[in-house]
Length: 183
Image (tube, rainbow, N blue to C red; front, side):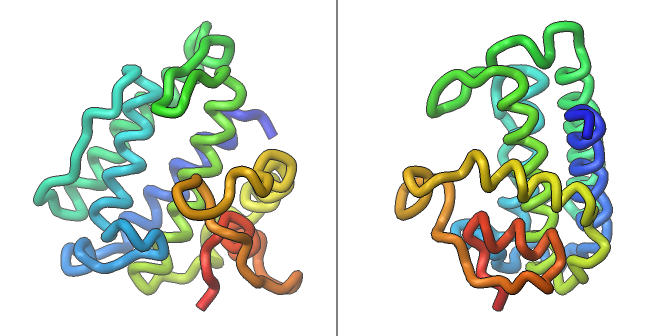
C-alpha cells in the first residue's frame, strides 16, 4: 500500500474511534498504562505535530472530545501534508532517540496511530472490529520485520508480545504483537 494512503487511513481510523468517545471517558485508563485517554490522544496529536513542524508542542489540557477531535483532525492533515510535501519522504526527521529517514518515519507514525486507535477503542468500550483490518494486516507484517527483542521490555518502546490466536482480527494481532494484552 502506498505509504501516504496508509498514513491517511490510520489517521482516519483514529479519528473515527475518537469521535465515538465521550467527555466522561477522557480520564479513563488505556492499555498504555502510563496514559489516560486524554494523554493518549495528546500523544497522537503531538506526534502529528512533530511531522509537520519538527516539534511536538501539544500537551493535553481540559479539552472536550469534540475539541480534541478537531485538534486531531487538524494535526493529522498537517502531518499528511508534511509527508506529502516534495521532501516529506526523503528528509530526515529528528526524534528524541535520534534521526530517522522519511520512509521509516511514516511507517512508524502509521503503525503508532493505528495501534493507538485500538488502544482508544479498548479504553472507551468500542469495538475494534471497525478499525481498518486490511491496513492492520499490512502493518503487522511490517512490524514483524522491524520490531525485535532489543526493542522490547522495561524502558523500551514495546512490551513483550502478548498471546493472541490466529483467529483474532488483524488489528487485535497487531496490538498483541506490539505488547497489548487482549484481556
